[in-house]
Image (cartoon, rainbow, N blue to C red):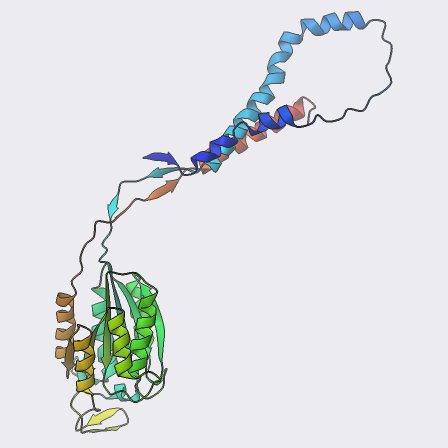
Length: 329
């Protein structure tokens, strides 16, 4: 479908005529007259050639009108609207909060028969989860001693996954500020309008840092309608860590707190002690938070202003050549 985006621009068409009609005329300097005895003969010759001069006089005027019409048409932004294309939108915003505390270096997960740390296993499974969120907006929060926003809510899932892959233990400290990351998620969601707000909180420890208590953070989340799914990562407590390898178990996980957070915000608590459980958790989250297709469409727009603009420039060049040949300006 063809249309003009700025149809009001055509109101500028009579502008040159209005300027010529109402603007004050330029002052012409008077010079002394010269008596010509054969003036009558010159007048007769001029009258005879008047008809032959009509085209040469009106031609530049006609070209000028066409040039102005082309420029006004270009300003009106002619464009071609393509056929409506349905867009996959769910209207759901999902924030992933990933723990970067020191205990995430515990190597109690196995991928391809190799022991890997908890953060690596989280990146692998969470990355696949991000890829499956077609139509949703996904954001990334990282936390340890402090919580900070790594990626705002976006449909650019590839960028979010890349930022997750680049996350390293120690970027935000060594402890675990669960209350702070929930507070930061609430703050980010508060300025947005979305039908469903979801936070997936992944940690392997307990709240040992931060300025905001988890209980206060839960109240804030409830007030803003934020649903929190908590994931406890790693094996049971009781072991020690030596050079990033777990011996006899993993770090302590405050399952009572994680369960409280999930229950009071309408979410659910999951426990992932190995890679298979972690994969099952994200598969279940896909079922709990399915992608819903909304009736939203996108129409591609192709701008066509360059055609009248180019034609106007071509006519203007012809006008300049014509005037130069006639000795005009």
